[in-house]
Amino acid sequence: MGPPRRLAARTDIVSEGDRPGTCLVLIEGLVGRYKQLKNGRRQILSFQVPGDFVDLHSFVLGRLDHSMAALCACRIAPISHSAMQEILNEHPRISLAFLRESMIDAAVFRDWVVNLGQRPGYGRLAHAFCELVCRLRAVGQMKGDSFHFPVTQEELGQAVGLSAVHVNRVMQRLKANGLVTHQAGQLIIEDWEGLQRAGDFEPSYLFLGGDGGPAGEGASPT
Amino acid sequence: MGPPRRLAARTDIVSEGDRPGTCLVLIEGLVGRYKQLKNGRRQILSFQVPGDFVDLHSFVLGRLDHSMAALCACRIAPISHSAMQEILNEHPRISLAFLRESMIDAAVFRDWVVNLGQRPGYGRLAHAFCELVCRLRAVGQMKGDSFHFPVTQEELGQAVGLSAVHVNRVMQRLKANGLVTHQAGQLIIEDWEGLQRAGDFEPSYLFLGGDGGPAGEGASPT
DNA sequence: CGGTTGTTTGACGCAGTTCAAGCGGAGTGG
DNA sequence: CCACTCCGCTTGAACTGCGTCAAACAACCG
Image (cartoon, rainbow over all chains, first blue to last red; front, side, top):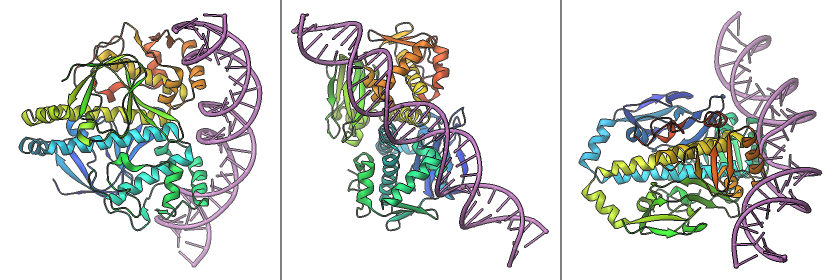
């Protein structure tokens, strides 16, 4: 594992079509994976939290099918593909860990499909926040009931498939109902139970163990 | 690999939460992976075509995060988890193939996220059809410019996040524009170029090689 | 034949988009 | 220290894609 690179907020890390020679592990910060459409629209596919093996697939598939950008200042450690290959040769068991990582990745995407396909804006945002809380807590990145989330409403909209204007209105409803507040780059969970209910959230698809919420502990494999 | 099981149309194969002792390979037919929501709605996550290793993740993650159903009469071959384990022990290289399979799976889900999040109904259906064409052609299941697709408009709606009524109207527009026809359980591609344009389709995310379309050949790894 | 299941059509309502303008805070240069 | 600018948030109004409800229709089947 090479020394971590530091990246400024709002900078691209890798782009769709690239054939990088390294994999990346996010050490600190928040990164977004996204796809850009021809018509200018863009879809944020996922938010990645510290500890995530952020582009394992570049090693296996060679070419990237999507881009990644730092959403705030980040530290990212590269692992060369040759090092990856060596690891696999010498410790074949590790491949199961990689498999596990990539399958949880897929499970999370499946849940986004459900979220985008079936839930109205209100529940969709609630659900997205619930997932973030669970994943951040699992890696010890929650500060009490809040976390650092320096994302614009425009970007939130690109993640959940809503216009920035509508995200604004939905956020106001979430706040008015006492569920979450977003200010000064912090997302504050005011009512965890209520947020889960609003988002119809059920964290088993994250394969974290525990309920992952503010009282949970997480990170233990199932 | 055990002898293939035969399954009737519209029967569940495995259900969310199950802990099956085998993995399944689809030999013949069409299966849908789906998640059921508490409020009764359901999201079809993907259509699987013959040759697909349909629940590799049950081996790695133990528990299923979604259900699967046969959409028409199917043949499915089981592979016990212990046999999987043996394969991995004796041929560690195979793990790369499994990794590849699961990562393409994830890439496809990412594209569904984009499809649901960014495209209106018309393009969304067009895109879904394009993907099916490419994947079916790659495994030699296209009959000329058409394929067997015995799916109701209700189910199509559950796949692309639209109501059955709206699917109906969109299908009429697709037909009126000379792109596709759906009759007697067959989907007929009338204008492959046009369909790709309508769906803003670009097949690289499938990692098939070639353009995968009616004139393509597919199936060669990148 | 009647029953069941899927498709089609129409009318109506709403969630969410788009356009446009105003507002507030943070940074910059004079 | 103030003026200016920029960017993100907020608000309003008008529009529309899509959902829902309901009824008619078509195909299949026992």
